[in-house]
Image 1 (cartoon, helix red, strand yellow):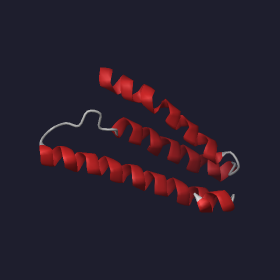
Image 2 (cartoon, helix red, strand yellow):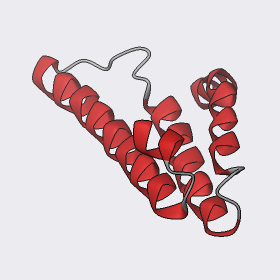
Image 3 (tube, helix red, strand yellow):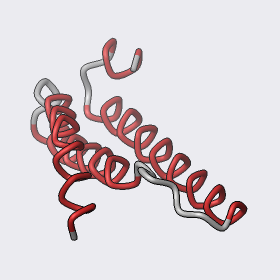
Image 4 (cartoon, helix red, strand yellow):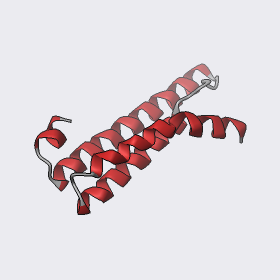
Amino acid sequence: MIVAGRYNLAPAIWVYGTNMILLALTAAGITLVIERDTRRRLVPSGRPGYCVLIASAILSMAIGFYSPDGAMYAYFLNLASPLVRRWTERV
């Protein structure tokens, strides 16, 4: 976050976005390992929220190509995570 805050350039946005994607993939992997080892499904697993985080990071990185100033606003999409979780539970 310090890199993205200090250097308002596209590469800094890409570093931050890549870090967020790797963190979300790691967290999703941990939930999968826990479910495999316990042979039970975690409720809630959090994976829909991780997918929203990955999507907002990719969107932020794409916006960073054109407007590094507004790229971080894409992370406001994470406020929709509870809605996505409820929708995936119904489906």
